[in-house]
Amino acid sequence: MKKPEIAKLLKVMKKLRDPINGCPWDKKQTMESIIPHTIEEVYEVSEQVYNRNYDKLKEELGDLLFQVIYLSQIASEKKEFNFNDVVENITKKMIFRHPHVFKNRKFKNLKDFKLWWENSKNKKQNSILDTIPVTLPALQEANKIQKKVAAVGFEYNNDFEAIEKVNEELNELKKEIKIKNKKKIREELGDLIFAVLDVSRKLKLDPELVLKQSNKKFSKRWKKLENYTNKENLELQKLSIKEYNKIWNKVKKN
Image (cartoon, rainbow, N blue to C red; front, side):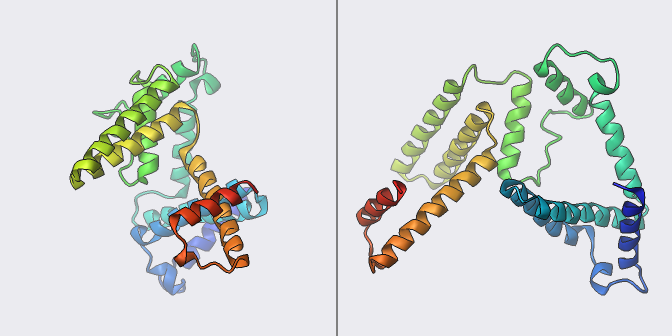
């Protein structure tokens, strides 16, 4: 990136927030009001990554960068920090966390490096889990918890042990459903989802991407089902579950 380009964008942001000549909407924004837009931009970036639409990805990355600059500008107005401080901080952090690249530190293997990485982040924490933001979506939070405890040895010996935990949690959920204990049902369902996510981690699969693919597959099949029922003049609301399953199995094969 050319320095003049980022400098130009910083000037644009500053002008938008100018108390006198700035944009009325931009001037009234706070960090809290901007956060939903920032989160939205992250999801739009991820969508274009999955779609492999690089023209749109370039655009969405720009939008996300602008969100970083936006938050930095508000912080600068509060005399807390500015965009250059953000860049300087992340540069120092990455150099510190990669001593095998920028210094002469040697690691035995990737596991040894990951353990050092976690310890380097947790020096000022009472728990290795204290660095996990509580505002993360539950799926990401669970994944981070599992990765951190696994990094220090709280880990299954193999994939099948992780799957056995899923079976254990499933049986516990079935038990609570039978006795209709709503509080325990919610708790056991959460444990089941947590266990399934751990299987995904153990298999080195991104649960977000795996679920996205399943959503896409289901949606594709559902649309085929809708097309079939339209051709056969069938009303969805009047179909029995048995009829649904019969059509579903038919469209799955195509």
